[in-house]
Length: 206
Image (tube, rainbow, N blue to C red; front, side):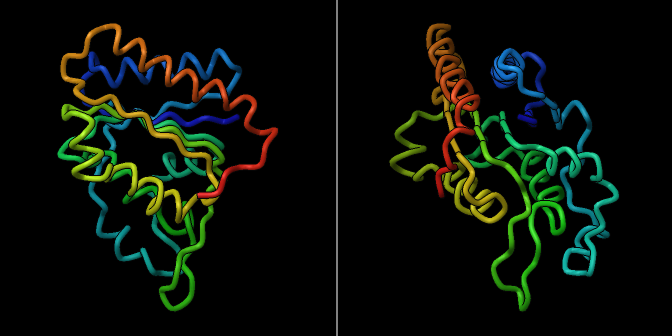
């Protein structure tokens, strides 16, 4: 498959980037075609521009400033997102990627009278890999996994219906023991290794 790996961490020696490299190597070893979108490395601008916002409901969205990112997204059959969870949300640069690239004519089409949007993306598999400083019980029991819910219901549910979605979260990740990281990498491998066989089955519905 054509796999797009989006990395959103400013530090080259971060755990997120190490996990991204692991995922990329696993995908390439399985024979997938991998494209890497390094948001910080590419200097991606997170803020939606005036031209983009003014054209949001026009006949055609002004995607000129994000044409490369849009092309890579629309060509992808599988998506891996690697990012830290900060304040129980996306890093600003990743939120900006959703704001600017998952746009009308790219990720979805508007319906008449501002009704439900119509999905455009051909994604069949999505894996979100994230690290959190907080313990699991705060993210899960207190806040009900807000990032997971936004990804699964609001973003993918609107733009890539029927996608196979997995999210792996490494909690208490500020100074994790090496063995915990290795176990987490095994979980990543287990998900990615199934992608090679998943096309034999119909996709699960969200």
